[in-house]
Image 1 (tube, rainbow, N blue to C red):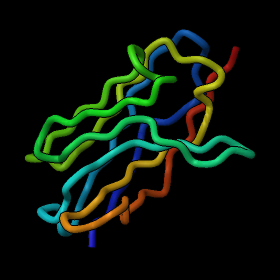
Image 2 (tube, helix red, strand yellow; image 1 turned 90 degrees about the vertical axis):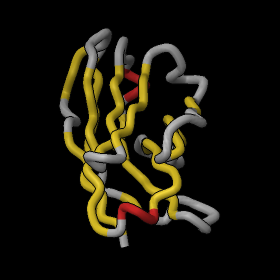
Image 3 (tube, rainbow, N blue to C red; image 1 turned 30 degrees about the vertical axis):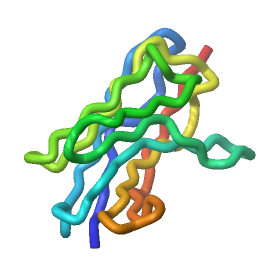
Image 4 (cartoon, rainbow, N blue to C red; image 1 turned 90 degrees about the horizontal axis):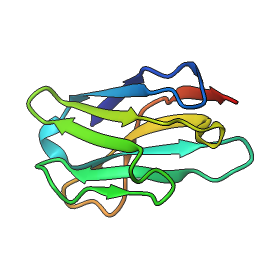
Length: 119
């Protein structure tokens, strides 16, 4: 099992920057990929950014390309999401997730952290 804990979410204004952090614990050696997802009220959860835990293969959703940066440190078991030029439409609960080796989907999820961007 892998446990994930997000932090860093808060209320900000449009144009501000914010950094989210995720701390992984437990069987972190089983992690193949990690990512950030988000869910807004009334909408389905969507991918924000993902990366191979060993490095590389970084993916960004079109809506955040050029504004968000995902960064992982497997030695510290942390995954960060640097968010710049925030927009009101970025308002959501942000979740950290992990996919294990041999898995077909993200199986481990954090509790989420709320990001609210005011206009």
